[in-house]
Amino acid sequence: MNTATRILLACLLLFFASCASKQQGGNGSTTDPTITPSGPANYYYDFDDILVPRDMKLVPRSSFVLETPGVKAGMLVFKGRVDPVSLTTFFTNNMLKDGWQMSSSFRYQRTIMVFTKSDRDCIINILDGRFSTQMEIWIAPKATSGTPTSTMRQERTLTQ
Image 1 (cartoon, rainbow, N blue to C red):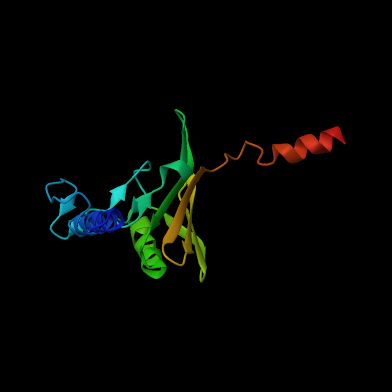
Image 2: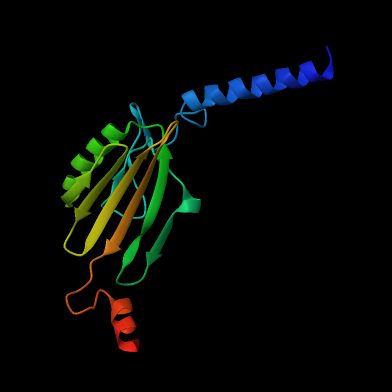
């Protein structure tokens, strides 16, 4: 057997071994406390009132969260092989359970859902890709009634 054949066989063995471990739950064991008999549980990531389906994986390099004593805001990015329609249904049901109210939504190639609470807004953007679905969750605090919402516009008017 020549060297090229050995390398090819080694690559194939690694490929099949990695596929088998993913089918068993990713790490090859079922002793992870987050895994139930029906699969891993859904997760609350940085925001304790926004539940994310277990099949969507966080993309930390594309995400950011700002946290101060009075404000927690940011954007979380997820990817996964999830049907966008079932993802939309998941958020429609679970955001209501967590006290959010849907204020508007857009759908088809891209789905955008806007949810509100008394102190924050949440925008969920779902993009249907060719091989996977990407999702962005944007969380922003609401401006208080005494805070100007367009300071840039005011400054530009004053300098002109």
